[in-house]
Amino acid sequence: MNSLLSLSNDLASAVEHAARAIVTVNARPRLPSTGVHWRPGIVVTADHTVRTDEEVTITRPDGRTAPAALAGRDPGTDLAVLRITDADLPLADVADPAALKVGQMVLALGYGPRASWGVVSALGGRWRTWRGGEIDQLVRLDLTLYPGFSGGPLIDVAGRVVGISTSGLSRQHELAIPASTVTRVAAELCESGRVSRGFLGVGLHAVRLPEAARRSTTGGSEIGLIVVSLEPDGPAARAGLLLGDVLVAIDGQPVTGADDLQATVASRRAGSALAATVLRGGTPVDIAITLGERPSRRR
Amino acid sequence: MSAGDDAARPIPHRLDRTLADVADRLQRVTVQIRGPYGAMGSGVIWAAAGLILTNAHVVRGPSAVVLSTGQRFDARLLARDPEADLAALAIGAGGLPAAVTGDARALRAGEIVLAVGHPLGIDSAVTAGVVHAAPRGPARFIESDLALLPGNSGGPLADARGRVVGINAMISGGLALAVPEHRVARFLGALRDRMATPA
Image 1 (cartoon, rainbow over the protein chains, first blue to last red):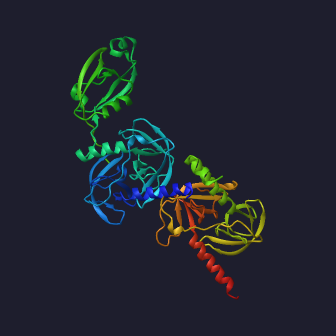
Image 2: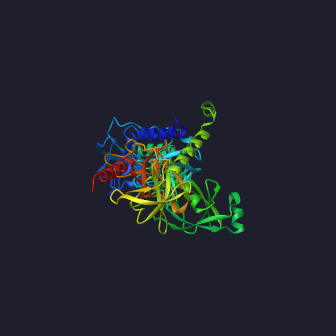
Image 3: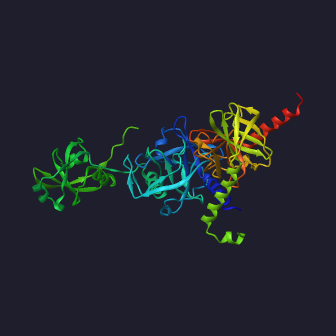
């Protein structure tokens, strides 16, 4: 058998293997999306494709449709989990999350199954989505994610699931959420229905610190974050932060920018403590803040 | 080179070479269709005696066929079916390298497919991709994730063995759509019946 033919057969077998654990997710008008049977009774899909919180159904590969209950959703990572009662649906074969390589051949799948072929075009480190979720690894693909592919598996040539592809996290690039992030978020969603993200309730603006102020802070940071708005009765307001305070350090670490601070805060759970150092009238003041829960936005 | 040598090579080399071999064979069965104003699209040598298959939308008037060797022949239109988007042309040449056909109904999702054509006037471009979805029932088209361009129309879609499974016809929603070989066979069957019937 020629090697092109054997690769072709491997790819087709990989699709067949992975397709057993793929379902059609009927949770928005007109265009269904794709879901993966990730762990027993739990289907993972892309959050942005789940519009209706009621009457979500899944369609199995054999064409049977069954009701599914939305167990939790995390717009931050664009993941949602559905609970199904279907005991005999095969489970996805999830691959070692660390195994991805640039140039590796992969297939993105949609319900049907439908296939799209390409390679991993770039890998990066941990990153934060525009919706605030934390993803373990940036996985960029050179393949086409066709309509309805969101929530479907990205598979390797052996048919193992290496991630979930979605068009909901980037307009420029085709991306996949690596399997490790899916497993982590799915576990948290199954447990509590949402991913807890810390919240301060302040509006901050970066300012250059005057020389004198720099000397009085630990670490000698050059910038501070001035409090320009305070959420009434928010976590920062309750802790005693005032308008005009200049935040210079968090847990003894100098602040580097509003985005970085936002990332630090969001990566902690609600209820956790944070030691803030602010300059108030030029004098450093330590304030202990208990993080609140990030209010959910209207969908 | 013996089979033993081949087996000893690292796999990527063998894959590369097979791909090049298959592409080369496909290029030889692919022709360019030219109209009065230049290149119109591509075509496939369906029979060694000078039978060329292409899309109906490629043939819109008097046309000529340019082989991969560069030889040019005036073509005679045998039949044209806009519904199936197929056309058959005859050229005055024999002993041509003809396409070997495969089985479009046996295609699996994820299987590798290759297309050859003359997109945007580029000489014989090869494009690789996979079957998007397995054909179900009397499917009109084979869907694949190939990035085809205008000018690929009428050219062959082949499987990993290099067997022609369809005639590339259009691009829709980022997918390449090809008329399956069994529809080509049906079209040619109707053509033969008509030619056998005395006028």
